[in-house]
Length: 234
Ligand SMILES: [Zn+2]
Image 1 (cartoon, rainbow, N blue to C red):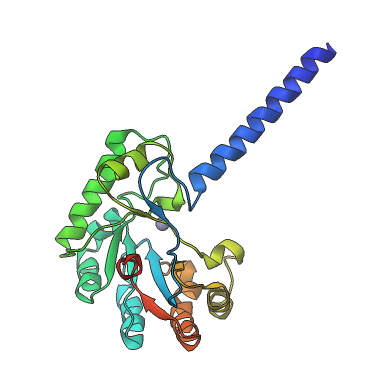
Image 2: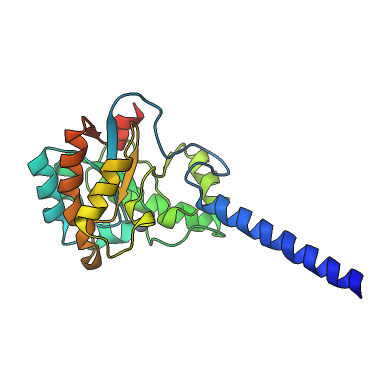
């Protein structure tokens, strides 16, 4: 009997450790099963990329005005379905000279998905990005940062880079953090080559949107230049 209990305990422990390892792997910002993944660029130059996930939606003008006022180019990881709903907003982002990336079509967690599902999500969104007149290289950011096998294999086969992030202020702050708190954290933690993740699109993300100008001011006064992901990768 003792032996059975011991076996059950050891098996449970091993399963638990495997599950933690698996969870860490699918959420890693540094590793994936195949292809190129980047969460930071090795450089001594004081350059940082600001990346905006999700969207576009009716907040586009507000966000573009902030960037225009500060004369900054950012990188937008757009959702295909949102581009389909707001094609003019996507065009405005491209026309303003920002960098565009693919953030999937339906913003579904892309773990245990068929190769066909993955291909459709990425190809449909790339087509919509092209329809918005973007002509540069399209990199990919996985929804919720999650990836396992089919996604990295498709990206590797099609030579598409996975761009993760170095710094997501809302990972260490409460979702109710003020714009000032968000900006202070980014300004304090940013390093040469950092990629900053911001979610500026939704009603409950007002503070992130309001933090953009403060982040730009703070980084610039610390001597940082804000660049797009494309420029950072150079
Ligand atoms: Zn997202």
